[in-house]
Image (tube, rainbow, N blue to C red; front, side, top):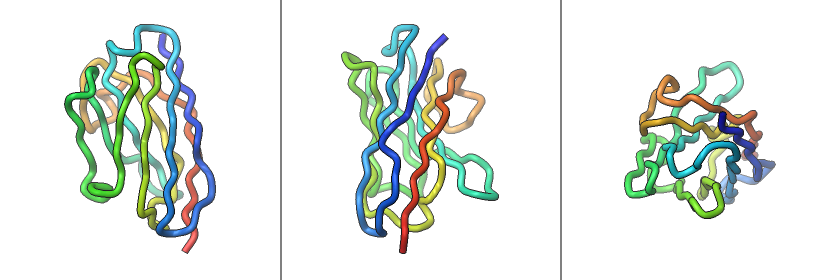
Length: 122
């Protein structure tokens, strides 16, 4: 089992920045690819970004390319999501997830955090 706990969400004005963290415990963190997903009210959960076990590969949804960055610190068992130039449409609950392989589909991930709310005001 892997336990994931997100933090860093909050309320920010459009154009602002936030950094989300996801702390993992349980099994060896570096054995897992990590992903961030989000779910806005009334919408399905969607892929935001993912990073490979070593951190050498990263994928981003088109909607966040150039604004968001994912990185991980395997020594600290933590993955981060740096969000810049935030827009109201980025408002959602953000979830981190861990899986054996890097992918953009939910089924690629076996473990999920509880989520953290990000609200971007206009």
